[in-house]
Amino acid sequence: DIQMTQSPITLSASVGDRLTITCRASQNIDNWVAWYQQKPGKAPKLLIQKASSLESGVPSRFSGSGSGTEFTLAISSLQPDDCATYYCQQYNTYSTFGQGTKVEIK
Amino acid sequence: QLQLQESGPGLVKPSETLSLTCTVSGGSISGTNYYWGWIRQPPGKGLEWIGNIHSSGSPYYNPSLKSRVTISVDTSKNQFSLSLSSVTAADTAVYYCARRGVGAPGGFDYWGQGTLVTVSS
Image 1: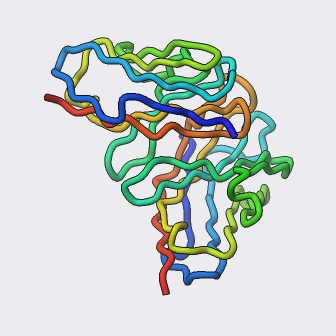
Image 2: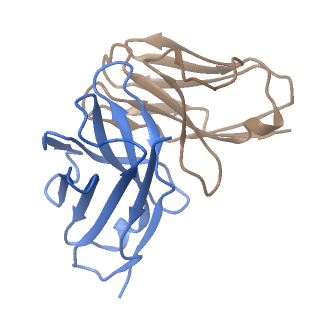
């Protein structure tokens, strides 16, 4: 099975900060990675797919990069509405989600 | 606008079978370009992929659940379904249905609102 290891698990930052979340795959998954945002009581929302393709309607402050085994989700300027838990997902072989990263405002 | 809606019992007894249905509206489930999937989330925990099915009827499952899971599709009703047998308290979770594209780019782009299923006697 392919494991996806996310870090950090929690992240506290100020409005306007740039932040990055990393996801490492246990084996090469090319660029078959998606990133989701989930707010409490809501379904996950797709932000990025194929590692770097921004979903329509998602603010341009979100970006994704990486290939092979290491992937990054970046938020260029943190906004209060970005408080949420973020998950990576590989879909190269079956599918696996990372453990999630909870983003809080300082 | 595509919409997905989960339905089914909110309470299931241990050792019994959990059965859920996802009804798709605003689009056809019969297209060749999409998989239809189930994902679950235990209370306070992360997401776990359960399995996907194509409208052609070809399913594939999370290896850790494969022995207990069946996903099927009914194109006449624009629905797909999940059965999970021999449930225990560890299967208590919010269950989501979702759509993903075949091939690139391939993320789950439409989700249902989720339904909480509790396993308890």
